[in-house]
Amino acid sequence: MGALVTRLHQASASPSLSVDLAAVADNTRRFVALARGEVMAVVKADGFGHGLGDVARTAVAAGATWIGVTSLAEAVAVRESGVDVPVLSWLNPVDVDVRQAVRYGIDLSVPGLEHLAAVERSGPVRVHLQLDTGMARDGAAPEEWLALMSAARRAELAGNVSVVGVMGHLPCADTLGANEPGKRALLRGVEMARQAGLRPSVRHLAATSAALTDPGTHLDVVRIGAGLVGIDPSGTTPLRSALRFTAPVVQVRRVAAGTGVGYGHAHVTDRATTLALLPVGYADGLSRAASGAAEVWLAGRRRPVVGVISMDQVVVDVGDDAVAPGDEAVVFGPGEQGEPTVADWARWAATIPHEVVTGIGPRVRRSVG
Ligand SMILES: *Cc1c(COP(=O)(O)O)cnc(C)c1O
Figure (tube, protein in one colour):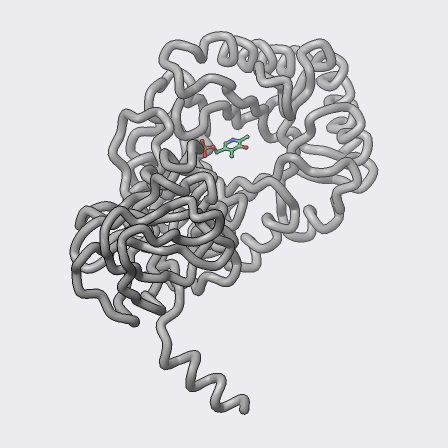
């Protein structure tokens, strides 16, 4: 039975996602070349769906000198993938396992007094003091900053923390000219840190958009996530997309005009046509919100996905063209042959490319190219 299952599995193509690490390397080199300081590769959310360890190792080989993540678990996974550059984890819970961070050589962000008190008990540990530079999200509120500076200085003198950096994040970096308030806030925060006797050597503020459009925000390190995997939220710079998502046709049928397709008959054929079934749906990351708009590449051209996108399957209208079970459809790719792109799927689903690439479901087979 086991042998039979294995043979069937090998004999049939299945939905698969291939990751082009050469594209990630190219994108990384581009940021390394344009950054005034260093590049931190942000590999949270499994490297934006591209594989945390693969993206981290590729980015470091291409010149990134820092890695950024949003949990200690991800930071440990980065270390265990063989990366030895500095790794910073932010968004840590207040009871983060500081001893584990120290053991793995992980820097922690400190967004307030509670976090400082928690980390200094288990230090010495390297920290980046995090200021909210205008998002009302993570980081210390400006009115807490002075108290945080004095407490951090006391903790440093006691030998429990080493303040390596000061970080902020820009709220409106996709809009040209909107970064001044955030930048001023960060520089003021660094000045206050110095007045408190701290000597942070790594000031970081910019992510992909600001790195591409506003060199004045680069400071010592830019934190690049989306850009590494070919997403440019600023719309200014062509980057290389790294994903190719394919699925085999599992069934083909000829239907008459007036045939209702799928749940609720959301689509009714207006002519006799051929429908091809693909075994991928919203559980695999094809947003149901893209129903009625989405297309795939099949048999040499783009074809509409018809009816609502189901959990496990979609139906493609191929007209009178010849398509057979086993033919490969491209859900999205870099777009070089005319196939849909991640940006197309984001538009069809009324979202951003980041959500498409981080939303690919766990049953899609992944491979690295
Ligand atoms: C995710 C994240 C980044 C990376 O942003 P991109 O726009 O994807 O480059 C940078 N900084 C912080 C604080 C983040 O959470």
